[in-house]
Length: 297
Image 1 (cartoon, rainbow, N blue to C red):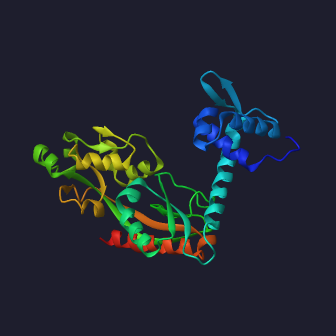
Image 2: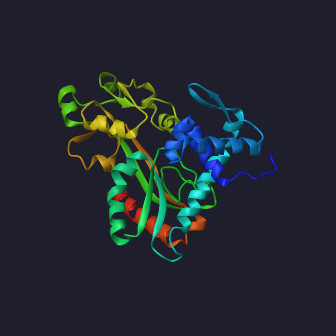
Image 3: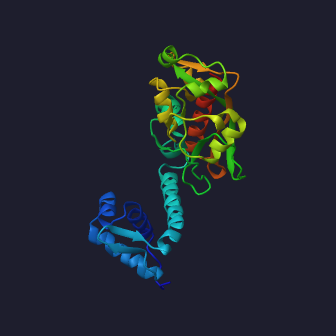
């Protein structure tokens, strides 16, 4: 390790090079020149005393040292972003940035009217909405507030339970008119079923709770819940959907109600250090109020 402490900005540039795979790509995303990015990477390599990338005609390949440093650099970037969000508004002022993370279904289908109402009440707030089915780490300040379908385990997190969202099987009326309505689980074998592509821990838990899923053969596989919902709405076949969400669409019909029902808990969560932050508290309360109304139908 060099005696010179690396500049914090080096880590930001390092992450962009790692994500883009080239100096030129990182330069474009950062709004810098390629030589500037190259000098910063050289300086970081000199500071840590190890090469971070192997140069080739096809781009840059991260070394084992770069891969081992990536999580630490991500943590630095997340904390720096949290610092900026915290400093974005004066203490006690209802202004500044609040970062919210939610699954794509919740973020796209449920949150927009809740956030629109929040914006009317607090127009100086800026919401950063991270749309991802990955559970972002609030302890590492990747987000300020999270909407989750699993109970938080860490003591440093403050959460509010909002009940459950029931998942059922649905199909569009057009599909059922053409192919009939399944009356038993065995009938699904004769239907086009929409399902997942990869076995995640959540999917494995679903299979244990609803054993019939293990025997299904999917005609359409996608890990995007939003893509699954779009396929159901288009009349492709039968797929899972939140019951409250399906109730908004008169074209969707629930099937096998007694056989296929999966309750998912719903929580809104924030770090305990933010519970007295006016901006975060306002967003937390608005999300809790809106999601509770959604869960209750």
